[in-house]
Image 1 (cartoon, chains in turn brown, purple):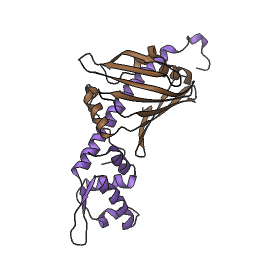
Image 2: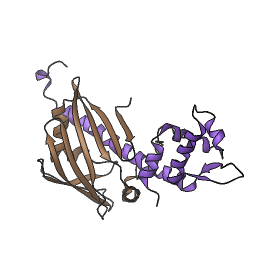
Image 3: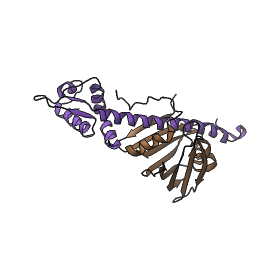
Image 4: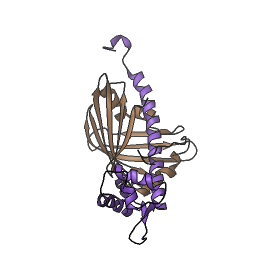
Length: 154
Length: 116
């Protein structure tokens, strides 16, 4: 069973889709209410988000801080460009590793799908330097060896 | 440094991915590469030019032929892209699995549910 798809779009974007068994309003709230975000936007096992500040309005800022309890941590800051409850979010964000990575522009759509939601998130591919810095945060720790090959290659 | 965008751009085409898969087996000439595809040699040559400028393949001169092989930098770039995409996929999968559980909790009491 694979509820999520992750594909590259051209040379500059990644598109992620995921189905949820809850209506768009609930999924949208889970993306904009800090007390809910802190419970799931955590990445690999072992990471927590002690700081989650969200101003969910156009032009509003947000800040997420993660730690792994072993001395590693990093944070993300961003701004909302558009919020259309409960169908669409547009924001820019960058990671501080600790140097800030180039802005990642993210559009997230929440479309009704039967009794549930089809979420579609389109984001910018990071450059090679950003990618290397992200891998170095230790996020890969605790991640089982994963063998996602670019579709159809070798 | 290898540009991720050049790499992804080069890899975004199914013919170019198939060419790389063939070159993983060893060096090949344009004629050999064109064989499995219903494409002309000039069309294949255009794809090779994209792969070459992205640093994914190398070509040497051997008389009138210019055999191609995978470049080490190209392989490393592909591996790095793969590693990063694998990390992203793994992190998102865990996130959304956690979110599934939270959405289940957020549901109104079953007495108020309609159409479930």
